[in-house]
Amino acid sequence: MTKGHQQVDHNIDIAPGDEHLEGGGISQRVLGYLIGLGLAILLTATSFFIAGTDLVWQPSIPVALVVLAIAQMGVHLVFFLHITTGADNTNNILALAFGVLIVMLVIGGSLWIMANLNHNMMPMDLLMQMQR
Amino acid sequence: MADTTMAYADSDPHHVRGALEYSGPASKRIVTGYGFWIFILSDMVMFSAFFATYAVLLGQTAGGPGGRQLFDLPNVAIETGFLLASSFTCGLATIAADARNKFWFQISMAVTCLLGLAFLTIEGREFASLVARGAGPTRSAFLSAFFTLVGCHGLHVSGGILWLLTMMAQVFAKGFRADIQRRILCFALFWHALDIIWIAVFTVVYLLGSAA
Image (tube, rainbow over all chains, first blue to last red):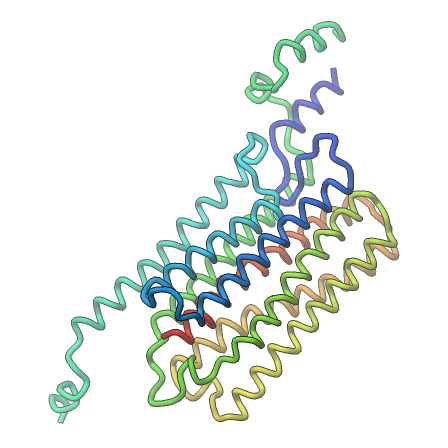
């Protein structure tokens, strides 16, 4: 009975960073980290290459860089922090989603407000004349 | 009693109903790891404020040098490689800790430490050369934001290295006790999170900053 409960308990939740292991040995886990490292290197190299290239339409470069960065964060979350969509990770995912929401609000809100202020502000030389 | 448990397990192989039943409090490892996960997320919220500041002040160079003149991208690429490799070796240390293998744990942590120190050395030299060129944090709002954001990440890495050395010493002295294992879990979370923040740093600060 006790053993059964422990088993059930183990299946409800898992600590963030812990891997859900199903029979995979050490080599399997090392392989997981190697795949993550390979993908991360690939994405990083693409970022640095694309930042300095003139092969693509220039205004697309910032967008591409942001997309590559978000993709690489995803790779790190999945392969290094082992955040999955499994039922045992629900709490970890919910906390992460809330963190992402706050980060988006802070960054998006700041940029939006400051761009508006910048847009509505009187040109600096006019402002100086008024103060005289 | 054993029979009912068995029958129950067979009828519900994925423990869908088990999840609805009360099965006692979560284990200490889950509680500790989850609490530290919340801390890491709040740390990322703090970093997001610094990122927002940097993005807003990107053009405010006060007539001084901007990102394009200051940043040495090949240098940053090497820095990034060191931190990425250290994240990988930190993962190897986690595996070694789970396997309770002291030798590979200490080796992996030592390599992680060296890679982290190499990262900090490159960053320190970059900061020193910027200050020497008259582009210190007092030069313009852009540079203040730059030094605050990148310096804050560097401080986190420095703190992480102190923690890393503490964990090496604790495993050496006390072995893989349950409480030490929980600290290793938290340290690994912290180190991987630093690498995630660095992705945002090299993208926003260096790559987008030198394009603007």
